Amino acid sequence: MQINFATVTIPTLMLWGLGFLVFLIGGLLGYFNMAIDARKKADSADLKVENAREEARRKFAEAEKILKEAQALKDQAPQAAGEPALLKLTNDENFRAQIEMDGKPLVAPLTPERRKRLLELINQFRPWIEGGDVSSQTFSSAFAAPQTPPEAVSVPELDSTLKPVPVNLISPAQKPKTDPETEFKLLSMVKQIDVVLQKRIAGTALEPLGIRLQDTIHGGIEVMIGSKKFETIDDVPDANIKSAIRAAIAEWEQKYVPGA
Image (cartoon, rainbow, N blue to C red):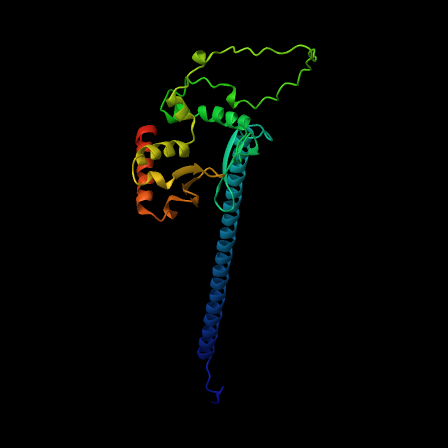
């Protein structure tokens, strides 16, 4: 295409110049619009980043507050740090119950002193179990740490020529009688259920089998049938024996467990 400048007039040149000017203005406007949009997007991104920072600061402050409250509760705990628990029940890695008394594992068989200490601690829970007035309960020294036994006092040796004369301070008729109900309450839960079981199977075909319930080292229950031991009631193969044991448990719960 060739342009003949001889035929081009001034209005035509002005028209071309005007078109070029419009094109240039349109390009500048588009550029400014793009710059404004990019600026808005950048401002929006900065605002989101700032909001995320504020949210992170808020959550961190809440976590720090909760941590301080937990530490305060721990500091206000009645048990002093390093002081052993009187009775502590936990689970080991195999989810078996582990009992500690005065900071030491409770392992059967118990010595007479450890058994006495355990009974003293258990007796303190009777108001809750029997539904008594807990607020008026006066706690004995059982919840105090076990006292160190007094030092032995040296006793002068007696003259070997003297023969001791036995003196019976309490005659058989004056011996204190123990209430059977009190003796029953002092038994463990498993022993109590065993007493109920023995009464139920007395005079039946199950009595000669030598069925009895006993405590495990970890505080559970195991079944003895003669010389055979079963770790749980479900392991007993005889359905009649299992039914008798479960019936004894139900009777024990009905008679001796408040609210059952």
